[in-house]
Image (tube, rainbow, N blue to C red; front, side, top):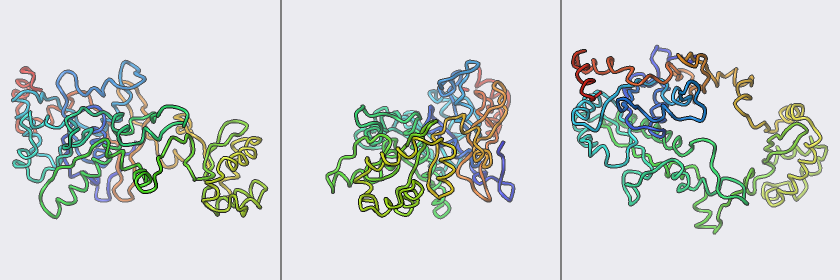
Length: 403
């Protein structure tokens, strides 16, 4: 279990209070990242049902999500009906005590609920309001519903992912949502830094398609200036060679020797040192132009070898290489163990619960996982009593369906 704090006993974001409104993935992933580094994240969920992420996931032992304990780690859950005037009034009181509000509703939803950013900031001028949507808060597409898959397509990554003879593919994770959540967390921290100088909060506008677009490297000027349309290229990047998956007796290995010096080391290791200075392969441009024949040469060398000794040889000679890991490989890997990349906490239903640790690592104020995803409304009493509500007040709100 990773619970380290800073040298002064306080987590890096331990002085921050975050209110998370919204559901599913993009906004809550932002909340997870902030909570990982110590922020108190109070997640507001609908009474009775909670965030649909409580039910999501391919595998559901005991009928429960294996995703929720991770996405909602380090968070506190309160129930609150944001669609009623009483619920909206109570939400304003919770937000008035916060440093950050994270929400991922469709634009205009907060405004319809009487929680417009201008009104919230009038009551709490230091508030950072982080808004995560498919298309952003303005522009002609802003009112549209936007999920991660649509943002991935519009941002460009779907078109270039997959094999050239197949339709566009997708990554096996919710990449667009998590990128939008990551950029939202970055924007939140930038806003908080600016607040140290100005004393004022601001609005952070993170759009799914723009978070994906930010990853697309030189795709746009390649088209505009060079007239080149990037296409799907499978396991390789055009003009970057050798960098591919190569066969061995017991499974494929990845080798990336696409720098001149590294390529010469690989050529010598293959017993073909003359290839290092061959005009067909000696430079980055030449290797890119002759990538297919170069891959054939390397594959002919690797195919007769076992992967483990081959990888040992490559590592000894400073040539980047590795395997394509699955979960079981990660759990068995000594480097993962040494760096505590996967940690274990105890879940009340699942028992020993493995998950990825907090990244990146900080030397003085590292993050940590303090708790797994909470039960629905687990922290109602704690948070609402903080507002001055009595047990009788809380019981009345429960009876009315407000919480």
